[in-house]
Image 1 (tube, one colour):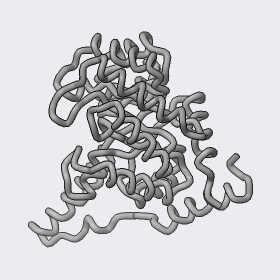
Image 2: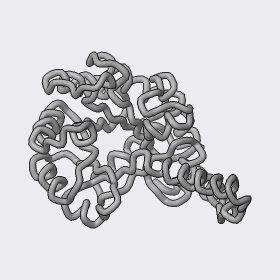
Image 3: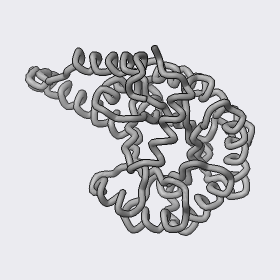
Length: 279
């Protein structure tokens, strides 16, 4: 028996009330099942990784594409799924609200709305807040607790202004965001500054050179990896393919992938839920 959406939502909210955790980002149903089998407790989609599976750049997926992707992730695992809704697929507050409602209908129990327009600008603060308010109102109309994440994009959009980022996150918190997120924070000091100025759980984007211990010690509560796992997989594929093309060397194809074991673990998770275990 599949876990209900309400059960997933409750489990997801409870995760944010316990110890800091990693929420990895699968790019398709298969990678989602592997991550569940490896023991992670929740998943978040990646806009760039998913767009890659469609042969498009980041931002190239439509809302309809993303909603079908959410359905696939939700069907593939028993875990709560939070979805990267980019800018809500429209500048108007109503677009952000519609994106949240559509993601929830497809099975998501959380989602993020960012304050960057694909046209190339960060929304003014008042407008960005209106979008978070609209998304919050849409979430509150649902029959289960939908964890709304509000993203301040400064640090990955060429404007690493920490003071402005903090002011934005404080405003998004007041507007009703459950989780705050400023991708691109570079150090424990930056993470600590955000955490000291806000009271909602902070999602931190993992980066080389920044350890889990440093993130947690600075106050980070949730850690995601964005599209990085996608690029790790693609990088390994490209490296192996290059050796095949240039040297006729197939040795890199000898990879210990435990597909059957991972599939068994996922099926055991579903079975545990159906018998009342894992409550």
